[in-house]
Image (cartoon, rainbow, N blue to C red):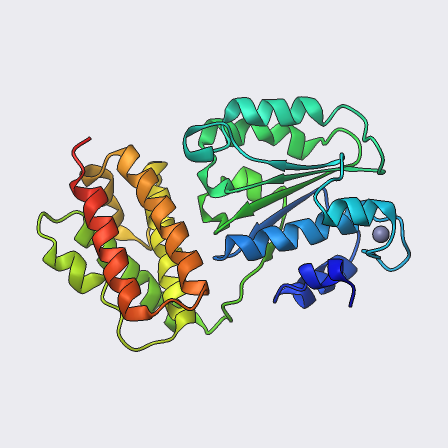
Length: 289
Ligand SMILES: [Zn+2]
């Protein structure tokens, strides 16, 4: 295996390979998964596949591949938002859509990788619709997000979804447990005492994958509260969260959960992790600024 291949030997690679070989490349892919690093590796891999001129794509050898895998390809755009906390806002979307009309430099197509798409607000999503519906020329949009849940149906219906996750699907029972636990943490964030939060964030038993699922659900609740969305799965916890926490606090908490997800992947000690999560969330909650 060459160095470039090694770098992109992420755990869900087989799934991505199967997806790419299953048919023609669509013009828009939603890449969802709890682990952002993993999703971005997959996005980079798909982008290389799209620009590769070799036979067995991605060949890791053609100049397009080498540039793609070293993140130097002029036709692969890693789009970071210019909004608060790096959110992609409506002006970023307009810029991307305008740029998509300019012909590719070296490859046959242009690829735009948009990070954290669950944070796109309705205005930005609506601005994106036309480009998704009638893409200018040979364009591939890759929308990275934790879950497509926060995207408008008009967006998801125009994209092919691919779930990237190291968390195996253990069925709906486990998912429901994670939703309940995440809702418990969200409810505790609305209470005045820190005791509830301490109990809610105390993780005992269960495995790392399950905690990742909880964190991913918690992030979704916070994102839904931030974007003022409704969701039957999160019920009262979501309603209370919208009332109890400012947008600024919600955004800071979402970043904390991202950090927590990364930490959990790095084999952090789970007891220390619970304490860190509880105290960090408590500090954000209590912050008067
Ligand atoms: Zn190649």
